[in-house]
Length: 469
Image (cartoon, rainbow, N blue to C red):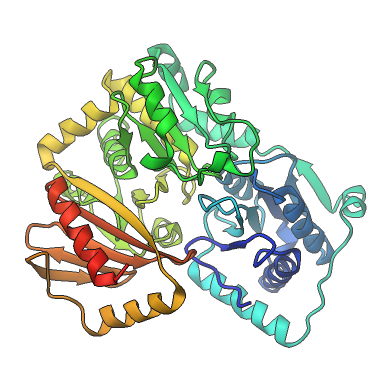
């Protein structure tokens, strides 16, 4: 199979694509890259989530790093991706590897690379590693490794807990004492993933559900979207809690449920936290979002006089801008959000705590905070639907939309387009529709935002017809 890095790392179905053999090939190419760039001498941090065989896959990567004379700090247990990313920067390591497939269904696993700055590998880096993979295969490159126990005895591999330094950073960024004093009744759904136990450790008294180890994720993909958070929503509707937080499989994405028991999407979270950073924390800087992210962010940036950038989907593109410019906040529709003064990385745990801080400061619920902002900038409705699509049909659709893009959809004239990642059609009202084939799954994603729910649904029905899905 051809090994390609998607929006964040290489992922594949366990035992079909994500095998020890293919993992070893990718790991060897990564070590070749690190040694070639002079980064191997700085060491490598390796972490893993709670997916099936993640610990064993992580140990295999560590064996190959040791075989290439790279010292390894391997997490002693499962860990959230942002804690591993922070450890890369805090320890001055040359890079990091996280074994996780993030929000993908349980049959997947994956290999994420974190660069020395503590964020996702930049596109130029993953392209080079893909080239090394291809070169090594063509030339029969041998996999160099040292057995795990032998490397552990020699000290080439050491086990460590990434939490202490990460927790210290979080406590500097968020006023945990203020949140605790406010008495907010909060509950967290880590979706059986690597974020289990972390927010309650920072805020004793916060409750959790779905925090045991379950590689099947209870039959629900660990993606914090409304349809996957029914139990969390039901708890909020009972009135016992004021807010529910949800983390994806490796805890770098955030979702929430508001005081009414309604799903509070990443668009809403982005909007509320951005205003909190500006008005309460008095932070400044530009804002960056991906093509599938709400227009509320545009209007809020305009209201406060902040520059705005739009990128393709994938936090690595946001990361690039965070490294190049003074970025206050960056985020994407899938729940990946990052903020200034941390690492250029998604962090569901930090963002969840910032939501609690915004509630504690204001004394208001999430929905109330959002509605106050919408009263200023306008009310918006958003929806995404996914349709399975085979690769051949996907390629045909891409060619059709490139060569003959529609100029009118649902009777509304298209006034602008953005084809940097998928096919985004923007209408005179500011409403928009995005048709985007997934980069990691055989899935077609359809997104729309408009001034009414009825219009959103009409755009999505039109998109299904256009796509033949």
